[in-house]
Amino acid sequence: MQYSDSKQAQELADRAHELMEEVVLPLERDRPGGMAVSSGTVADLRESAREYGVYAPQIPEEYGGMGMSFRDALPVFEEAGRSLLGAAAMRVDAPDEGNMHLLELAGDDLQKETYLEPLVQGEIASGFSMTEPLQGAGSDPKMIQTTAEKDSAEETSADPREVEASRDGDEWVINGHKWWTSNGVEADVLIVLARTDPDAHPYEGCSLFLVPADADGVDVVRDVPHMGGGPRGASHAEIVYENVRVPEEHLLGELNQGFTHAQERLGPARLTHCMRFSGMAQRSLEIAKAYISEREGFGSTLSEKQSLRYRIADAETRLHVARTAIRDAADRIDAGEEARIPVSMCKVFTANVTQEAIDLAVQCCGANGIGKDLPLADFYEAVRKFRIVDGADEVHRRVIARDAFEDTHDEELEPLTRFGKPNTRGAGGH
Picture 1 (cartoon, rainbow, N blue to C red):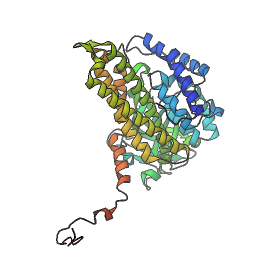
Picture 2 (picture 1 turned 90 degrees about the vertical axis):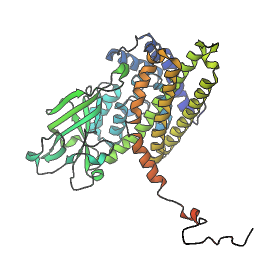
Picture 3 (picture 1 turned 30 degrees about the horizontal axis):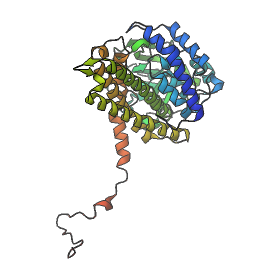
Picture 4 (picture 1 turned 180 degrees about the vertical axis):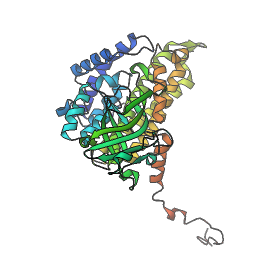
């Protein structure tokens, strides 16, 4: 398929494709199924990405990236998604990729020097600590269990169901209970959302903080057992923050603007997720087509069975529509729009399209689909969470529906007959 990618984006994507075909995919195929890769292997892959000229294309050059626009860098995410090792190799892997973008947008010079530059180089890892166990913040972030009282440093609650940040001189004291902090076990720094103005609406009364993972009071309780993980073994940590003190300069962005900054992170991050998973779905279909073209049954190859051919055709069509919509939303973001509705449309549509495509690929490959000699089983486990992370399907549909019903055209119903009001329109005519 041809898309409206710039010449620069196409050249970048071509180099990313070469890296995948010549380095990443051969390594993946040689690795025993289900085996985790070492940090040394990831470091070697990143060095290869630098040699191919595709390392951190989305990050400004001054911080160690390539300085590409978001739109031009986007096709690289798609190429990276073709293997669970690709995103880490090119330093476009979540959650670090989104956290780097957030630091770029909201961080001050010292924060960028301390955290952004080492993140880009892969010297440290980060986690985004926003979600709380029930009944805390989840799909409804307004439920965040947060309070902030500038003069209550000695009274901050140790109740792990609450997240509090209160000022004590030039320090912030954080107490709380988070979970599903992606990369939380490996993280060197955690970006924590906490409520800092209890009298304001949560969207206007929360702030973000940079918390070193080794700070006193940070207790990484566990890696929450979860579906997927793949060869990178990504963690989703449960973390308790108990009287964690960080200096004033660890406030990330503007005070009480935490949700605004989080949205600045989440919009582009949702699209990069979409691209990674669309690349994963595309490769899944490639594997399926190769397999059913060789596998014989009932007198012919499976690829000659009309049912499978049509299902593959439908999957290819829907995936093309998703990839086109993602690029449209990215164009809007590059033009300075928030593009919240297009992003939500892309997120919910692509999540379902990619899940269906990978599920089809597993089905086409039968027992080899659920075995781990091929990457499909890992892909299948990875894609299911996509309908939940970065906003569940239902949340995005709610956003889309709210916009859809903001302006209804009542005049379209004027021709209807209503009880007690005979319709004289056109009476006596033919």
